Every structure is written in C-alpha cells, then in structure tokens.
Amino acid sequence: MYETVLALHSVLRWLVVLAGLWAVAAAFTAARRREWTPADNRPGFLFVLGLDLQLLVGLALFLFLSPITRAAMLDMGVAMRSGASRFWIVEHPALMIAAVALGHAGRIAARRAGSYRAGNRAQFWFALALVAVLLATPWPFVGHARPWFRLPF
Image (cartoon, rainbow, N blue to C red; front, side, top):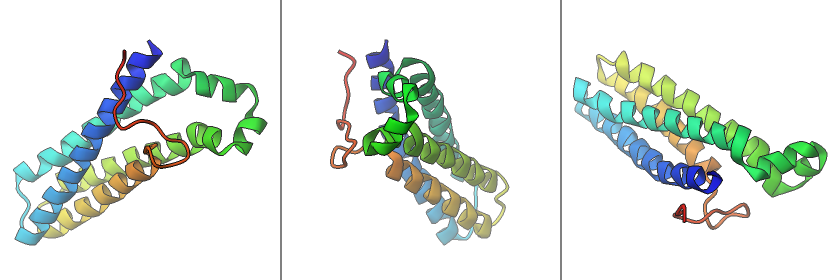
C-alpha cells in the first residue's frame, strides 16, 4: 500500500509542476495581452486542484503510511539533527502547505480578475506557489533524493 501511494504521489508531482508552469504562463500571457478572459482561469484551477490532491495524498503518507515519519516521530530530537529526516518531517510538509496556500491565493486573484493587473497578481501568486513546490520537491540531485519516476512494482 505504501509503495502504491508513494508512486501516486510521485506521478502527481509531475502533473502539479506542469500545471504550475501552465498557470504561470497563462497568467503571463493574459498580462501581456492586457486582458483576462474566462479561459485564463482554467490553468490556475488545474494547478490548485493538483496541489490539493497532492496535499491529500501527502497527508496520507505523512500521517498513516510512511515508515520514515513513523520512525522520526519516535524520537524527534534525533530526527531533527538529521538533515534528511528534518526535510521529511518539517521542511517538505511546511513548504508544500505554503505552496497550497499560495496557489489558492493565485486562484482567488484569477477568479477576481477583470483586468490585466489582476492577471499580474495571479501570475505572482502562482509563481510563488510553483517556486515553493520546486524547493520542497526531493529531486534526485539533492541530499534527500528520490528518483525522477517511481513505479509501484
């Protein structure tokens, strides 16, 4: 069960990153056009939807399924002294929750958009959310690495 949910979390990571890039690009394009149309709302909606799904799957891993968090919760002092454990227990969840909040702020700005200035605000919030996602993702080239693609078998 753990491996399957972790694989789902890994696949959703790519969908969230792609949707985030699309949302930022769509908001940038709308800002350059100096108009905001209802079609400009779709990328931001999909980005926030992906963030919400990713948060739900991540919370299931964090609270119930992950042996990493289960072991770290037994002795938080030791876990906090280890960079990798601290990343999984504190930094990753905190940055991802911040990304969800920033994405929702962008979605609110996009829904209220009637002018290109509102598009600029949406672009700002979506870009901040995407940066938070990219910073909190365990890329293969960092110390707490995960593979690019994870398969459940």
